[in-house]
Image (cartoon, rainbow, N blue to C red; front, side, top):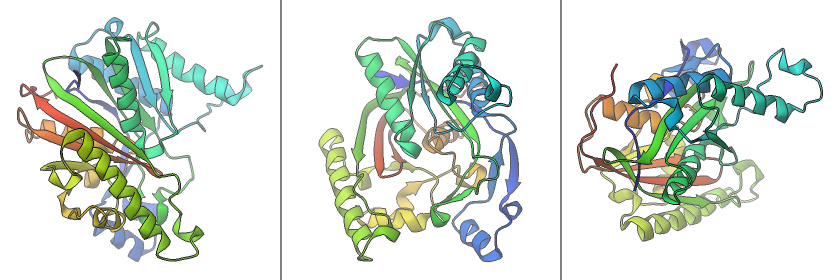
Length: 323
């Protein structure tokens, strides 16, 4: 069964305090009371961030680039345009962006790795990208798949999103998915779409979003139980995306789940890294020695009306990656 190897490479940037966002004091206090402390701003664009995360992953795992036969990229940063690419002749914006990501793969020695891209799940791109990578391995389409998530905030755009639900950071993270006796065995990737969820501002009835969320989450929880034999509340180690607990509390109420059960160990250190929060938290828990052989882990990846639960088992006590 496919596993995530315990070597997660990253690309970050400069750390800034929330005070540097220029927010009102009460807005900063609202975020800090929930555990947000900083945001990260990268000087690099998404293709370069992706390249850095890939190189670190290959180095940490000791995997030759030639051994990777597929790359699954999850990103929402389609706005990325370098000054030189804007003046390229005879190419559309999508052509230019594709060429930049392809060039990053070539520079990393991955010119023979088949590229896949994923974006429609937004902040749940990790779960859907992992589901794709797992399926490619299971179907024997590929042997080793490199999964990479790379996103950054549009310059001059606000890093506070969804009425204070999270603070965005510029981060790329990558990992290798393959058959192995060591790592995090990917038992299930359970996905659930709830595109009919109304935004609060679009609802005629103030209670409509809560009712819709309750219905969606109970359906999702039923899927999780059917696949894993557990409800979400039954996981001893349930890692969630770095979101404000005010938002998560409404979701948890639908599941009879105490919001305090949700682990977000990287919230203070990185803020919200688009779709990479769960992968970065897994990296942190591993490096801190908090995972043991046989541990069952749930990764709760949440997007715009998309939900994914990744059910993992720690196998053979993977050793820490070199620092």
